[in-house]
Image (tube, rainbow, N blue to C red):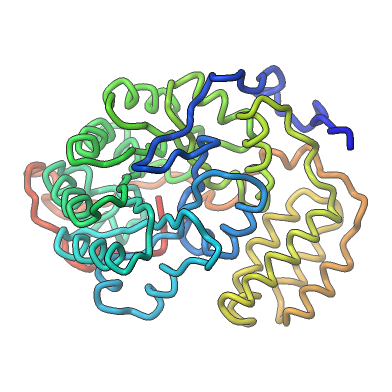
Length: 398
């Protein structure tokens, strides 16, 4: 069958003239013994990147698909919910998990348990969470303020991981006045991480405004011996090419851009292999993806929980399609799996993907914030004392 190239109306003005990769222009990302091609990583997103979502995305293209974040302390304590979050599908390979912790003791123990049980092939660590209740207790994006504390946590993970590669992800810093990303990158490199990733926003920005790709380029200049990955504003496949060409980074991390658009990974595979992406799916094809997604969620976590989880995905999938408002209102009400499938049957089949929805924001859009830190937290930035368990929260991945 002839391959239909993407219509120019589906490309934003930013990407209309961006050509696919040329042979040899980019290389697979070396992460331990893995070679990730295309050089694309699914960002861990709390409440989103569970096995059903990863399976849907993986069906569209290769890459590295990271689990939603789990917290080290409750994992060590055998918390049932945390153990479920750390599960993988039988067909998943490699098994990539994001871990969050603030205390080297618990982080080291959690990594040891995961590795000894043969549960993971890659561990990513989160140091970018901007949530107030976390940073105000000294956790999340606050940890890189204290490089010795950060180093002790990363060292505990790497030393207990054996041959399993450990990577870390972080933000530019707290706000315009307090940058931490260069220190965090050096810590990752010095402590034996396999790669580092930068979400090119500050904690104060949350998910607002444009990501500052120039910071990714700066980090790439500072971190020379391991891969540097860039995260922020990959809404179209060509964005990844622009980021890598502009910054020299070794790969991209895709977060909100794939929400309701899992075929973005197909487009990414195409452009990195030198092909133009094909047109986005029409509504009937999107409906089929949605049906598979809700069925997978219900099989994984039970019908009631699966339907509840699907509601936000339904909003992301249908955003921009004409006449989808009524569908979203109905799916947000009391609904069974059968009821959701019946509602999907009411959506149109032949409606083309709306061009205005290509870059429509999805996921977190909370504006900016003032970042709160513990009283006196900045007095001694060389202090390596871990914060307490109140600095641990698994509700946001940064």
